[in-house]
Length: 155
Image (cartoon, rainbow, N blue to C red; front, side, top):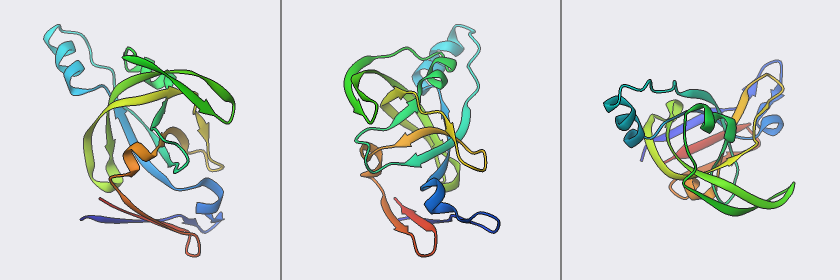
């Protein structure tokens, strides 16, 4: 089981983990089947989008900032009822391919992520474009070490 440690400490910022939450670098792209479809028809494949994922143990499902999904030319495959701190509603569901460069996971197929309005930045300008929910976290062991401002992920 590979183990990855992320120290969330910045000299000028101090306790970074407390201030931002546990972050993991992420690259979101079009699913492989859709890439193949585009390639066969000579359609340009949209460039993958990089940013940061916030590990959110309170989220049952993984969510991606919906304008990014639209930028990737993705079409919703479903809609589901959702409940957020802003209230209840319906959200579209999309298939995506995700890469986590810092934990050496590439082209991970996710058939169902929720489109949401997530786009915000940390105090040091890191763009949060994804919430990692329990649907994905169930495959990981995570240690949140607040004393040392670090997280450990293993899969």
